[in-house]
Image (cartoon, rainbow, N blue to C red; front, side, top):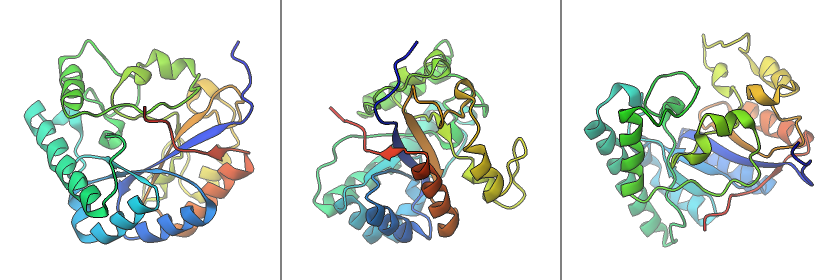
Length: 247
């Protein structure tokens, strides 16, 4: 049995950045003293470079989320490489403009699709396409940060702790706030907040489990008031947000 944590830590990751409310989200997180990794799409960075530079200078990490958000199981390795390289170069240039050292290169696949399907199941190291994608990440220096004490059996069994890309242990399901999106009955802020009270540690709903920290996934485009409500619910759970170690 895994020992209980002294303090449950949440590592906040925010996908599909930078969206229209990026500046609001950054300012709110600064106000709340909450660090985060923003996974950015290359196509979105051009119009908000100044805001991203400001976020970097405030201590946030900018990660690669591809150029235009494709399913990586549906594109070739050459296309995947192009998606990664284009956004890699844009982010690298923004860090240079910010005059801040890039501590680590981090990547998250769109839809958490690591190359085999659109289902959130596992990283199949026997799959040639999956291995090819991991090789591309390795060549360009991408690493998995040190997310301490991620103790879920399902997460380790799925192989996510061995990948170079960043997965998550808790999907906030905030993407269900999009019009006409529904999954397992979650479809609005009320149901998403209620989901956070569920206690199914080996089913991706372990916020109430004291034996593992969390890699939390949210999205940049959700309404700012909904974003704040979800963050506040995390805080009422006693979760302390930290940035992972990079060495």
